Image (cartoon, rainbow, N blue to C red; front, side):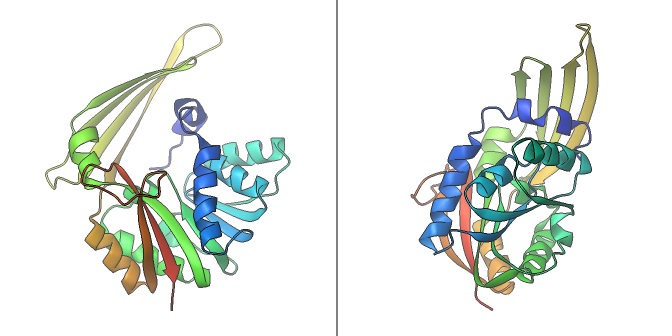
Length: 248
């Protein structure tokens, strides 16, 4: 999924995401682990909204994403705000940096875009090579509960100023993968609308799968948090944050 057309309307459709609050939450977790500056990898950074927040707060940020169109948006925003961020076009599972970083952050269910548990394990093993000994990795995932009860077989409508989006989901037979079809209607200057579509899948992983993959890659799971909280996940938690430390 390249998000080629989606990139142009992504920020408008995610206007409800408080990136500043989310960045502050992540940075508070990093601070609890004695990381307040230095190199930070924003993995699957999209249009760079979180990258900008980290950069504004003293981190040297590298943002990677598989979509060149998303990265064009990110670079434009960084230049407009005078932030010096290195953006690289890379898939998560093919991460290749010039050295190691203190912290890796992967937000907004990007891990769920990995095809299956094997690809998730491969990604963790790759990332281990580019993080300092004792470095911290923070990522969030949509839960199996969310896929089954919230996303699966449901349709959502987004009616924004310049774009109308119909988001249709189908829960796959495995009970953890959601097939997503997005139809966009983008308003043009003359008042007409241009239609385009995107289709992709997201897979939810169990805590056991994520924990085992992290441990096999040389990480220790330090904490699991329900989204934007200090509390532990519950059965109906929709998004979970994992905090890992590289130990070998």
